[in-house]
Image (tube, rainbow, N blue to C red; front, side):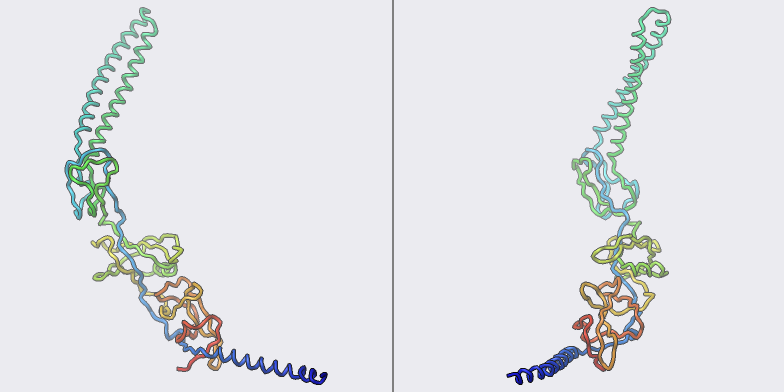
Length: 352
């Protein structure tokens, strides 16, 4: 019995070593199952013309509303019309406000007559008080009557100005040169304050709106030639302003660009901003997503056909667009089976 136990103990290290060797061989065999092909970074870099979606926007798009109550008496503009600043759009029935003005003017005349009488009474009482023939209270009363008449006159003048303002608001005019994109008022319609009448779009003040990554914005500011490209035309533009806020979802910033020349293009027109890239970039087909980040898979420590896969995140990369990769030109980019490779996995480099 003791000899059998001793024999088993002597065999145990040998068996364990064999199991370890077999397991290691199996693991190594598993690791070498995935064959990949690689390409040097220098062979796939492209000099791309960068572009991003953009659209034409108007600096002023306003809804013109009524400021007083009144019935639409006459309409002077229709949808699609180009109107100039201060051009007449709608005239309201203004008779009630004109009557209010006449009443205020007539009331002012009464107040002026009362003031004239109050002044005469005050002068008479001042003469009488100096002779001591009337009590002091009568003089004070005539002074108060004059002050009351003066205040009433100011009130009546304010009523007249209010009526004039209302009459002026009976005529609605365009605040700036624009095109009418929508007419909402109807002939004979009873309007209330804030009732919408027209939607105006300023057609002679346009700019281009786009969203770019912070890296592209830096390069874009230093370029002399930027173009807004539509299906039929190309327009030179320059960067006017960058909104200093990065969108949390797209990781881009809004950029506003001005047209270099005074051209007539419709607001809302879609196109693209195009510019020549100042740096070579890696094509979008080599960019993949790993744990929520965009980047490329490279082969490191390449020896005798084997290597280790490593994921390199790309800062400010946008899916579907070329991106800058700051690596040596001889960096090996995994091509074939790149979507199957995991970060840190041992790989076998296939010879082409």
